[in-house]
Image (cartoon, rainbow, N blue to C red; front, side):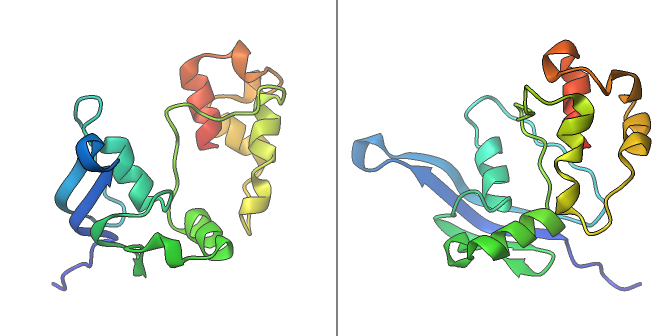
Length: 157
């Protein structure tokens, strides 16, 4: 059986913030891989580098050292990507549901999902998506009118 190449491959990943006495090393030589379709969980105390790690993989920050490969894209120096390349990478290869869901408070649940339809070449039918997410009956409510779990499902949509 052929060996599957990892979708995400991280080697010797390093990241710090600050300089001199204020320098804080957040990631120091992280190695990991994640296969396509694999589900993984990161656990750790507050400040242990979980969000920093995801920001690096998502192309939101530049690493100080090491390598990051996502589906063949070398993200080791994200600064070399222009805005169009970053947008294409984030749209096609990686997705985030942030801790704070970043929903537009003055748009309904349905409208929050509809505004992202332009990101896909073949967007899903919004009503079908709302039904799949268990949000159809809440489609005309605003984010502040639904639970945190429902807001998260809206963000996934």
